[in-house]
Image (cartoon, rainbow, N blue to C red):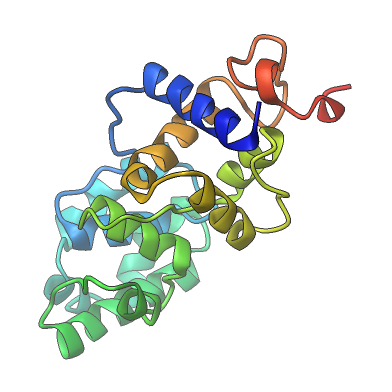
Length: 211
């Protein structure tokens, strides 16, 4: 079996397991998605979804957000961790959206990545989930699974993203990155993983990782 055939079979398994894919972070528009993804850095989606309703009650658009102080934002988002940096980024990016983009979230990777607190992964999530633009957001969890499945060398998230994009048509990217996330949570955790019962690792996993 070639690497491409293996990659195709992994995509088939993921599609069978997750034909319907919910968006992990609750949001109502591109702005609330952007803020939720920013908050998810080093924080679980579950915790973010518990905190964002409190934040949206105070401000769910950039105009309302900048009417509040950074300290007010920080007080709400503190349970998400890194609240000093995240609160500054939320306030500052909201002001930039007002000053440079008419209060709207820009629909380009370049403009998004120029916003405070927004890296390539965050921009990719927004582009794919808010605007439907093909993107393959890769975090350390997807990096770990791609390495386990011999689809990437796993050296860094940028390399993993390039490797995965070579295997899969861009029409699949937006679905696959979410399917891999859900699969990792359910079948392929970082610790306590039994590769023998994992639907993918049992067939294609790096056995040296589990010996």
